[in-house]
Length: 189
Image (cartoon, rainbow, N blue to C red; front, top):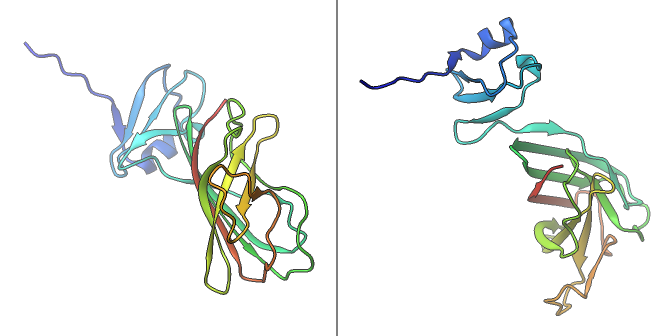
């Protein structure tokens, strides 16, 4: 005789309306979205993070803080999805009216604190698109002492496969409308 195991299930609206506390390890499915949450025995439904479902859990918006530009940043938008101890992030920053170029390391806040410094070796994960139509690669270094990532850019024309020619300040030629964007994954604390 086969044993059948079923998890709790209901629509997203019904879960939100009843807002239950799921037992430790208890899973619950939103039948209309395909998303799953897992209980911890104390957190109400509306405060639990999605663990899986559909193609992936839904992205959560956050507003990253940006330092290192001495120009006006008109928009800084970020989204992340947490699956277990893994955080997938995408961030976009559009430059506003430029006054002077930055001379310090550009940093952008992370949505969740990293488990350890993961940026000793920088990795390419973004692009800086200038208004004039060219693209430059960007690299990031993630730290855990402050919940930020540092941005590094390559000087155009520099041959530096070991990243020795990569710099932590805004390159020359920043104009209003330039877009910086990053997509990366890191382990959270």
